[in-house]
Image (cartoon, rainbow, N blue to C red; front, side, top):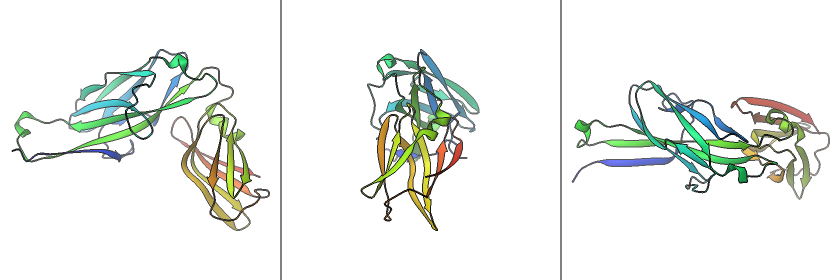
Length: 234
């Protein structure tokens, strides 16, 4: 009986910018432009070791999404040391998605260190690392731009919660939202997305019946993964 342990750490989602992340994707998200037949994803292996790669479209909970309107080519391949690889994301039914707002999907790419034949019977701990990025399908006729969509967010209070409305066709990624009033600063949300043409609520731990006279401080994320700081008097 072989004393070999295979540990598939799919729940360990590491940042692509990590020094020890192995294979990394160029960019922090994928934007698929409406009307395009395909787009490319660039992967890079800066390590002196080869990896076997597997790419899969998933739901937010990491379960396989077999109905996603895209096909990945190739879905499995080997990456040599200090090399790059281009992967194509091909539209397959994307024309059926809503044309007045973005749609979001998730791409998982799992990297498994490649083994030498001489190592097959040795005691080993093999760790497969899975990274996840978002795919935004962006219809071509949306009004405005993603970089300025946050300016149209509106805020109000209702039953002890902050009500956030996004009237635009873009997903707005909020890294952090803080409401300040007087000498108080209250964190409302961290690492959330506000879906297009939707209303969501952020619960608050302190009693606030009105936002009037306060200030909303937002740290947002743009298409390039960079932070945008915004302050708005309410």
